[in-house]
Amino acid sequence: GDVVPYLPAYPGLRGITVRQLLTHTSGLSNYADDAIATGAVARKTTPAQIIASMLARPRDFPPGTDWNYSNTGYVVLGQLVESVSGEPLAQYEQRHIFDVAEMHDTFVAGTPGRDAAGPFDGDPGDWSWYYACGDAFSTAGDLARFDIALMRGKLLGPRTFALMRRTVPFATLAPGVRDGLGV
Image (cartoon, rainbow, N blue to C red; front, side):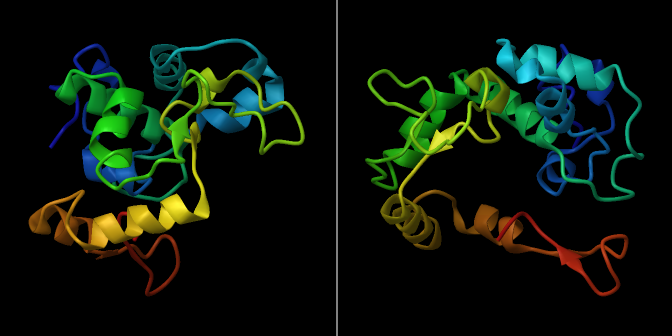
């Protein structure tokens, strides 16, 4: 259903579902393109500021009618996780994903004692811009541990995992294309 009951501070999200956020069919514009192009990533931001700036724009299309990759959707999903769990997103990820999957070399930017600058040749800007959509760092071994934990049911129950794997036809991507939740 609609995400607004879980995020009442954002009534402009009315009509958007969790599945639409996960499948990039929400109609929300991708904030990252403009933030990087204009240099806004050099300044600190918050998820609330990112969401508010995108809600001030017209939607790219009505929810569920088309597809367009959107990091804004991931920011909304991060806020949704915080709202439902009562935990900061990075803490939730650590406790419910990284620890459970035994991902000891994975961390979120800003984690004390961990340097997120290493993999980049240039300056990516302030990490606050990558909340929920690019602020986690991992190793190939930890990504394999994540996959194993996911497949063995340590991260999701069978019903949720089945929903994650379910695809639906989505002709606006291309004829015959089926879209799912990233698996």
